[in-house]
Length: 185
Image (tube, rainbow, N blue to C red; front, side, top):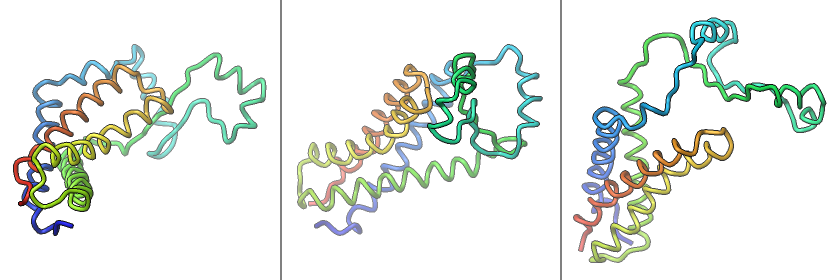
C-alpha cells in the first residue's frame, strides 16, 4: 500500500481543480440557471411559506406512513396536486463563504477517499491511465450519486439530473487528472 503522505499533492490539486471546474460551471457557463423556474404567483407562495414553520424539509401532501396513503382523502390530495418536496432555509441573504468552504471540504473528502482506494489497489509506479481510471471513477461516483437519488425519489427533473451527471463526469476528470500526472513511482 502506498503511504498517503505520497499522495497529498495530487489529493489537494484534485480538490482545487474540482472547485475551479464547479466555479466555471456555475459562474461562467451558468448552464444550471434554466433549471430553476419562477412561480407565477411567487409573492403569494412566499407569504404562505412564511407561515409554514421553521427551516427544514417539508413534503406536500404530508403522509406519515404508507398506510395513510390508502385513505381515499390522501389519494385525492395526490391526484389534485401539487406534490412537492420543499426545503426551507433560514431567512436572510445566502452566505456564500461558509457554503464554498463546505464545498471545498467535500472536494477534499472525495479526493481523500479516491486517494485511499487508489493507494490500496494500485502499486507504486502504476500507469497514469490506471491511476486516472481509479481516482476519476471514485470521484464521479461520489459526485453523481446524490443526483440520481434525487431524480428517483424527489422527482428532480431528469434533464437536471443529466446536467448534474455531466458535472460529475467533469469533476471525475478534474479529480482524477492530478493522480494520473503525479502518481508516485
